[in-house]
Length: 202
Image 1 (cartoon, one colour):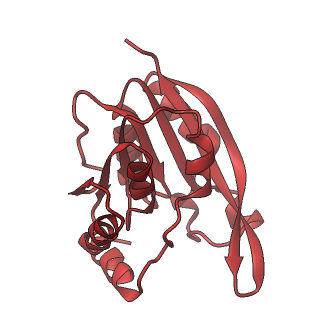
Image 2: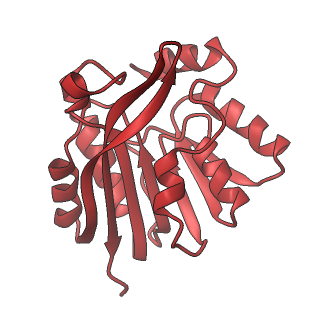
């Protein structure tokens, strides 16, 4: 979907993705000390806001002004400061200093934007920083619930880990993981890609 389609989706109801942070964000970052973080394709800001509440200096980037309007409102209501940037993650240029943490969750993109966005996310990891990527797995088409039906918008752990290695990061984890989704018909399992990598301290 393009920017206008996402704007329309975010205007349909209060919260598209809910208010709680993604489960993998919470579990994977438990061992990290707070620092600077950018949340790419942040949507309504649930992950960036949670990070800000836990001491991180947070920035959220998304091309949907409707999503960012919601994010600002929620952050203000919850009493945290987050820098919100309206930009396309496939053309966004990270600052030279980089971030202590870069999170990119469920970037539903096709080529060539897909490669550009993943590379930008990896390049945004500063010295000693961490990269955390979660997305719908290609396996989800046949083994999981929900997610985009277009295989070109899905990822594999090997693909993302390979890009991380090419951009000079050390891959700590690259796996297909199961996420339980609550539906009207009961819990269902979705299959996600999870990649965590770090950049050597210079």
